[in-house]
Length: 432
Image (tube, rainbow, N blue to C red; front, side):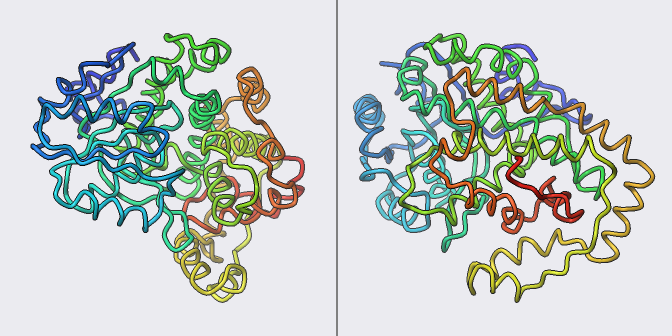
């Protein structure tokens, strides 16, 4: 894809590689520039967001960019400054805090990265208001997605929200972000092969819907990005632009599909499980740092299953009572509601086994064609100085092994975690 892919998506002139009408996105403006200083109001004026804007940042991003944005946007009308203290959590309580503080505003302006963006995306959607985002770090691919990762009663969920009308990326700000946040964006981008393999598996084995479009959007930028992690970490603006385009296009792919499946599969389930059940006393880690590690786990698991004999699936015998016993009353019922939608009963396992017996060579060949070797992915992370093992994140191996075994419980997506567990080939997890 050429460098004007983003512009063509916004203009509605990019053909759908899967056929049909040209691709459409709700975002009206994406600006990537060496500097946006002094142009903030001019960028937002054409969007006609209203005369009262609520600018949402946290105690870190306010100093980095939020105060500058508030000052610049004052020429457009009234500004309400909402500065969340400390490191805010993307949960229901913080959503309600933002909604209350921005009650009189016409639109929200997010200044931050993953958490701030998700909070504003979901809060504004709940109130039927538009929002835009000024990025402060290239740390994740959610800027242009329709979903927000919000924790509800302890269960981390991907909730339907809305797309930003505008996304503004000042490369000078992004290149100056902490190295860990840049590595986080790289890690979040690294999961394309494992996520695509998992999604394609569910399509070929269980007839779940699937599209090639999200991955076609990423082809050119991904190749360049993974070839030069050293340049990215050295502050090279061309490499940073490549990472930013990858993150934006990944988000657009999920937005067009209407869900996060192109960018979130088994590797994200393991990461979400750690977020939900890990010890809060462990060192903090960024989402993309976690995804880099869990992506390597999924890549190794996928290789093991694709290179081995055809799997033979057995019906899953779990029920709601088993989930309640495992996770407690509220969490158990919440997880069961997700898991039950994909659980293979006797008929489902039988049908899948018939398909495996008839077409396994074709299925694994098609899946292998979209993957990248786990050794290659690990080398990219090492060259960037990023974590490659759970111990690098401060996660005990015993906990990580449990996460690999149980992460499939929390969502309805059928991934290689399910294929391995349903064929009794998930062990030994310590080899992953």
